[in-house]
Image 1 (cartoon, rainbow, N blue to C red):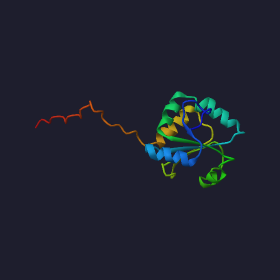
Image 2 (tube, rainbow, N blue to C red):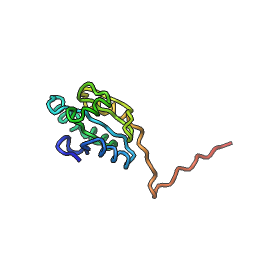
Image 3 (tube, helix red, strand yellow):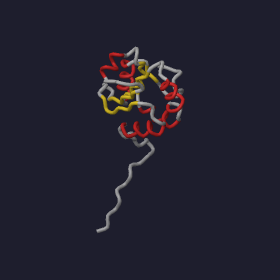
Image 4 (cartoon, rainbow, N blue to C red):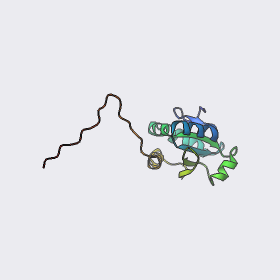
Length: 137
């Protein structure tokens, strides 16, 4: 697990670890392709990944931080042409949605929420299921 980039967000350092976490928790993976020398890296960390709403939304994904220069094969596999690029995938790595460039926190959050499946909620043991409404003949 990586630290230093956006406190509060769990990052996996490579695809195998991200895939393992995604499968274990039945969550999609969010692949973040970035470049160490890009000024966009700092903008993402200070403007987007620091937003508490973004941090909360990213708890629904297995986040994988991939430095473009070190993961060129994966960048080719996912047809990454520019950084930053975000690729939301199934736990198996099948692409579901893509975002490129540095979005505002609101734009990133909107994209992520639109791309993610709706959260599933299960009733707790103390909740009783709703009773059907009575019909009047």
